[in-house]
Amino acid sequence: MNGHVHRTPIVHSQTFSRMTGAELFLKLENMQRTGAFKVRGAMNKIATLSAAERAAGVVTASAGNHAQGVALAAAQAGIPSVVVMPTGAPEAKVMATEGYGSKVILHGANYDEAFEEANRIARSEGATLVHAFDDPHVIAGQGTVGLEILDDLPDVEAILVPVGGGGLISGIALAAKTVRPDIRIIGVQPENASSGYRSWLGKTVAPVDKPTSVADGLLVKKPGKLTLQMMLKHVDDFALVSEEEIAAAMVMLLERAKVLAEGAGAVCLAAVMNRKLGLEGRKTALVLSGGNVDLLRWAHTISPKAMHHA
Image 1: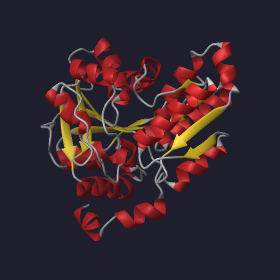
Image 2 (image 1 turned 90 degrees about the horizontal axis):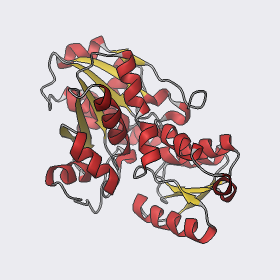
Image 3 (image 1 turned 30 degrees about the vertical axis):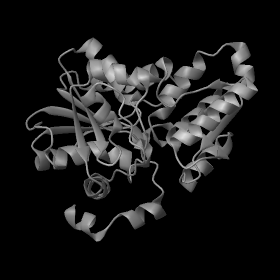
């Protein structure tokens, strides 16, 4: 994947380390191409397509970041792409996706309804469906985040990862534990969008019907079959964070670290700030999964309480 994706920086934060008692490093996937890690999995999947599959093009469903990843990967490979986004998708993400050359179709109230439409289009047009998380090639692409972290921090003790459908944490966990079986892999989800955690805890898919959160990138009703298997095998722990904690972490990242993180990108810091995991004294990497923030919408979600909290 060299030349197609950025190797993103990992930076030590003295401020957050001091505040939490853990030795914290931020893996800045908000600085990735398209502003999020998703382009890694999309590039990897599209690289595996045959000539016939490339000619027929690809279709995907996404609330935003995966859409941009697929759109860029398809544009670079010179193949057509269709992206189905929920009708409430942030305008910035819709425009960015179209800017990469994809045809965007707005359909459904959430990711799952958009996915059903993408599936229908793929079947009727013979295109390849690029799943946002439940695909081995996509998962392997996301796993490169874990390899880069271990490259830069060979003695890292824990990696915290935001969880939506589970593709990112599955890839990171598999990659990291293959190299370092003793490493702790911890998932973080919003309290109101906690299907990954519930499924992991109960060892079976536990859907959340109406997930809601400022972390719009994590609004998935349930993890994938493949990702749940991988989470059960490799994930050591989970933390849930409140909306107020996520908003406060977004503000802190911007104010203290000059890092613009979307809600999904801020959940890991939120978990550590609120001492949910007993990581004091541990060398810990937080995956800041993306930075695609609709700033006008963001300004409305940040309450004075969050500002005060920060």
